[in-house]
Figure 1 (cartoon, rainbow, N blue to C red):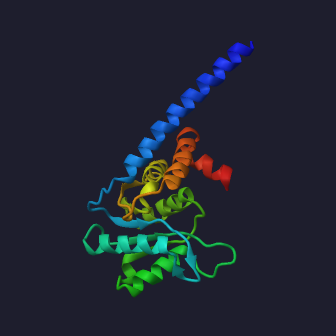
Figure 2: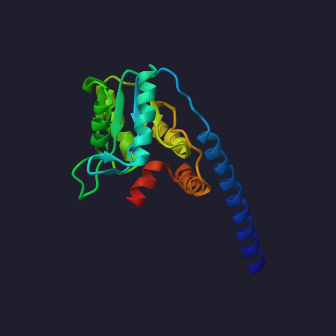
Figure 3: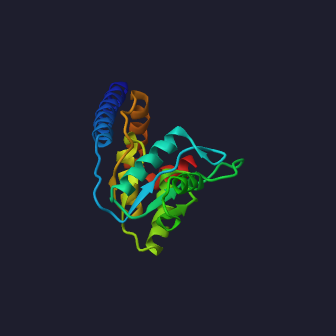
Length: 197
């Protein structure tokens, strides 16, 4: 019996190792994709803000979205992200204020300020975009998020392309994202969000 248990454990670990390796490759390959092409809107995933001022990560996303907007990829920009309990402003509002100051007309901006995770933000955006008659979006985040973003957007029913910010992901970022994608692909990202809060 002990021998069979050892064999089962060895087989399980081998399968897990191969699965994680394949997932890591998928995350890495996806991180190199930039699918910019005409869509209905550019959707910016939220990141930290400090009393209404975008963090460096959020600023990079906003600048990239602005460049896409100015080059005619889409006529509108959707800003996502809620706030922490002690914050005065949401991530979406910080992005809105930043882009207004950059010269983007208010009517070209859509705020979706609910959602404490990528899944919840995209699900909330889907509901808002349906009312706005927006069906195709270009997702803007960091490059190592591409694989998970596309999987979640498919799960919530968005028709998407990805166009990430410039920069190569670190090994730590790729490893963390590989773990999230590996679990999400098995159990579903909605279940993963509910399990982790």
